[in-house]
Length: 91
Image 1: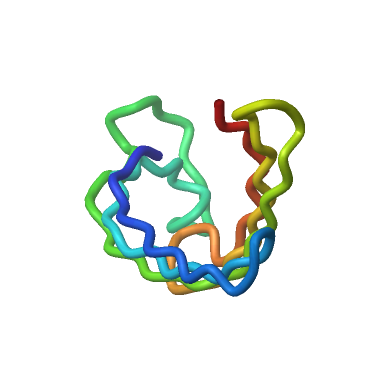
Image 2 (image 1 turned 135 degrees about the vertical axis):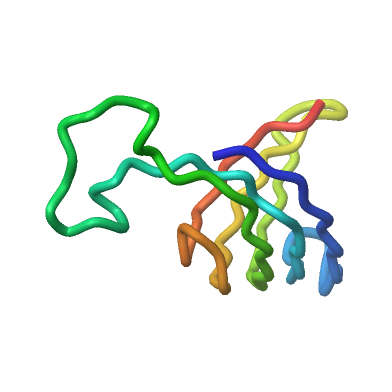
């Protein structure tokens, strides 16, 4: 999967925020996910397409150095993965 998204953050304090994410994902799925019988063939049977998504969640930001922050986010929404936990470092 690959995609583009846009995130809007609403800061509630110096460390906590909520966010809204919208975007579109490109996917290429194995037949097992949409064909219960499965398949023995290679890429030619994989289904691909675009899927819009929207999700909302909570985030926590903590300084771990000068101009370095740790981000932890949880989101739930209408998308291929339903829910995510993301951890990142921003410098």
